[in-house]
Image (cartoon, rainbow, N blue to C red; front, top):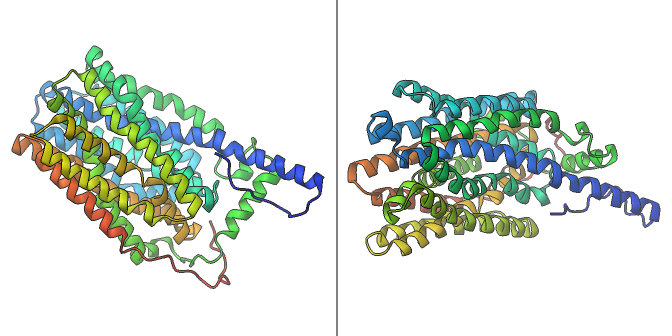
Length: 445
């Protein structure tokens, strides 16, 4: 993807035009160098949290001699750790360095993910899953903040989407691999094998990534300065926030946080329990379960790319969020109604749901830096994402608990359907961002 033109001058001089062409070539490197590194990092994080669903489907509870409710608690504890340390981690990363914070968390979450396959005692495994959530809690919001230092408003939905493609694309590519590994090696060895790459990748990250364009060696100083000037000018007109924590009680931030709670409640229950639902419905092997489970994520990837493109092109956000979430909620309701009729129709509804819950991510997170100044962006992104983590806890735990109580997944379908529909409705209450008169001093980043 080419970035929009960022020009230093409107002069028609051939020499200046050549300079502009060179600058644009340098700016395109962000899409080739920075975003792939960010994508890989988030992909590894998502792999180490989502493979737990395969472990549950492969008989984790039976192997550890625990109840299904205990297994659901293990899935949910990750999100409690993920919830608790979002905002403190964002403060640390903004004040010091996103690059260094992510390096440390890569090492830690790879270790904790691998230990999931080693530990045999329930309470130790519970502590491990909680610490895995803590280690991964910093990654998503601080990398979204990192992208605000590198991409303009007209590029941000696409940049966010390419980061978040690490979510469905990892599940698309690794679902068959994880299913195959579990079938051949067992779920415990698979957890160990899939935890190692994160620790190795940490050293690639620290060697390559920089917090700001002017710190990078692979982009010319002129291009870096032009980009940072453009980003600074985009802050003009955004209402300043004196202390970042004051932004948490703003009406739009509260709505976004509550909305993301319900969205995440639906999506994380969907992600963690889809392999179990597919295996029980289709009565197939773990390898085949992995292949079937990958299909909704392929649909999600296609829709995410399409939505982010048009959101940036039209500079619209809300119209690309609520309709897709409403569609996903309705589709999940359809899967509930068709569960006893046809697995094929039920699975088709799950594919539509998977596309709908992932499609709006890019424009949704592009809303925050368009509403808030730089000095509050990292903390607000973390605050909203922590609300999503809390929703993820309730989604993963309650869906599994309802299935254990009722003996089927239908009650969980209804819970997730309701949550996604509520998340769509809440976006409609979000007002357009307020603008200052442009005379206020720019906040310090």
